[in-house]
Length: 384
Image 1 (spheres, rainbow, N blue to C red):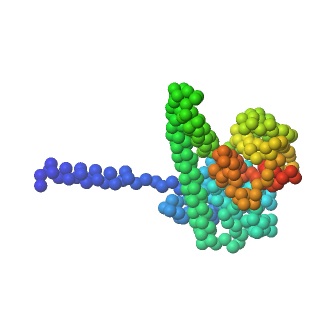
Image 2: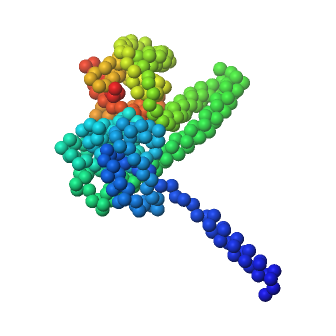
Image 3: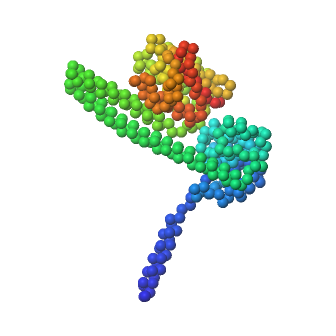
């Protein structure tokens, strides 16, 4: 073999090794927040879980030594998969306060919470599991390395599945926007040709009635597209500050216009307490508009009345919307928040779905009951 061929073989072999190395990628670790006021607990946790991996991804630990410090960390970086949370720190219930704030103040529904306590008397297990959205609860004296790794596996699996569900929801929302855009383009084309045909044929044409039906149905389809677009556009229920009185008063202007479009002379009764709540103003406005418009639709046909009230009770700001129509039947009640469910032939059935999407995002509660007049009462409770 001559020297030229020898160098050629060496060069080819070296090139192959370089290519193999370039395909190696570092996997992204699962981020874990350890919250405990005892330094030894941090060290022990890191030692036990140091070699732990789930689906080929290791753990990346961040430490916080108080409840307030953990909240500050999660405000800056919410993308932690698991938090190992001590109950008793700067106060006897610091960990429980953190769990509550993570879910309701930071609105982080993805992170999995594993509570650990050395003093179970301050946080009875049954009460904690019932009232808080946590993944696991352990007394430190009972927590072995095997139990910790098992609990971590369960928590990460749950976190992974929640993230997949959210990703699928975002994909569906994007698809809904795309479909709505395509349908809107077609309805505009249909209406355009209908108008051209109507002008050419004249109002006395035999086809005038058919053209009016086509135009009416195209308008209904446009309403459906707008409702779906509005639903899909609700991306993040961010934490802001909104004055419920100011938002409700502006929303009521649109609701009065909607009642006029329906040809209903609705007698509105309003009473709004000035109170700031945790909500994006535009999303709070959507909730008010959809609840009031729903009441307008179902209010009595002869003498329609709708009452809208915002008041503060204990630790909640409550928005109460009622009408004097017929109350929701027991058969329909389980489905009223489902997309496209409606008992009115001309309605789209997306209004209460939009309400449900926003209230779920903020962890607000909506209660439905019957009024003294027999109509429906929707009570929205917003934690203060």
